[in-house]
Every structure is written in structure tokens, then in C-alpha cells.
Length: 288
Ligand code: MF3
Ligand code: CO
Ligand code: CO
Image 1: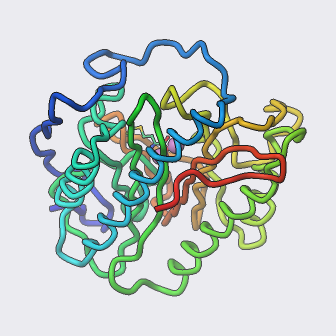
Image 2: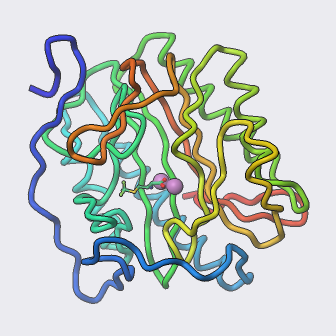
């Protein structure tokens, strides 16, 4: 059921909306078509950064809880339930739930799905790659991360893609420093990925995050200079979240208006952290 005759993923059935206890603060966009335009900047005080770190820690621990349940035979909606329960039991709101109408508490993106896969009754198989992307909202702040996991054991090609995508994120983070333009991040990621002939997804990017889920600041994962010349400053908070593929960087969207796949159905992997610019470089805010 979750694959067509060519072995490509197809949409499954999405279960009913999960409830969030009334005492948990909702982001302003929940129940609306779109978020209010964000008028703040991307620079935070040390006190605010500690709040983003708290949201980021809860999100990272939720990813760990979900990852512990990734085995052949589990469905992505079962993984969504684990992430949802973890977040609400830590008094955090699952930022994706009700964001522009998104129906679930995490994104689960399998194999050729680049990002924004919706949890449903799709069953994980040995050898699949699955990305889990969780954002937690607490104390008025969002913390956003994702990671790609191997279900059971995968091919060498797939395993290398995962490890090199993790390394691409690490290299992007290492370029962060006050006074540099944000386009240094993607330059490092793209030059590393190109060594292996990987596709580097361009149309989905890192972003400012904190008071807003997506603040309007864009962090490309390819070499965009001289564009995207925003200069990094101490206290600036944003995500880096490269998506690499075994084939093209081009993509298609499913009729659900969310699920993004590689156009050639090649495998793809992604890793994401939220980080803050410091005097010395960057500090990751989404550690467990
Ligand atoms: N967490 C994703 C990101 O990294 C955004 C997911 S939005 C959703 O930016 F609506 F698809 F959930
Ligand atoms: Co993000
Ligand atoms: Co994310």
C-alpha cells in the first residue's frame, strides 16, 4: 500500500488530529491560515537564548525518543504519537501542528522524500532512511532540529549519504562567525557535497527561528554569493538544515501540498540544528 509498482512511496492515510492540553501555550498561527508577519529581528538577549535552548533541548530529546522506536514494522503515525506525547508531557507545543494547516506534530520523510513528509499509516521497512524533524514551542520560543536515521541496515551508498549529510551540517556550522555573510554557510556545504557528486537542494533553506518559527531570514545551503549577504552578529539565531541527494536537486510536491520528493526519486538525507552566533563561532541550541 505505501509504495507504487515502481517501488516509490505513495501517500498513506492520515489519522485524526491529536489533542494538546489547554494549559500549553499555542503559537499565534494555530487556527489561522498563515503566521502573522514577523516584525522582530533575529538577534536575541542571553535570557532569550536560554529559553530557545530550553525549547531546543525538549525538541532534541523528543527526536531521541522517536529514534528509539524506529524499527522495521513501525508506522510513521506511531512515531508522531511518541513525539507528540513527549512534547506535551514537557509542556511544549509541537510547532508543526496547525502551522499553515500542517496536520501532525513532526515531519517524517522517508527515502526520496526531501522534507515535510506527513506521518500516516506507512510502515517502515529494513533499509529505509527516515528523517524526523521536530520543533518545540515553549515560553514563546521555537527550537527546531532534525536528523536522518537508518531503519535496520541500509546499503553502503545510503549509509554514506547519511554520514556525509551529517558532516555537511557540521561544516556549515563551523563557518559561522560574527562579521561573516550568511552565504559562507552554503558555500562550505555545497563544496563538500560536490566532492561526492551529490545534489544540493536549493529551494528549502535554513531560517531565522526563535519568537517566529520562520522569521524571514534565509540561510541557503548552496553557494549563493553575492546574494544572501546578511552579516552574522553575536546573538543571531537561525537553523542550518542541508538536504543532499544521490541524484538531482530538483523536486516535486505531492497533492497533499506538503510532501516534497526528489524529482528523480533518488534517495535524500537531511540534518538540522538551531544555533546562536557567538564571539567565537556558533553554539548549538538543539542538543538533548
Ligand atoms: N521543521 C521544518 C523546518 O525545519 C518546518 C516544518 S513546517 C511543516 O523548517 F509545516 F511542514 F511542518
Ligand atoms: Co527548520
Ligand atoms: Co525543522
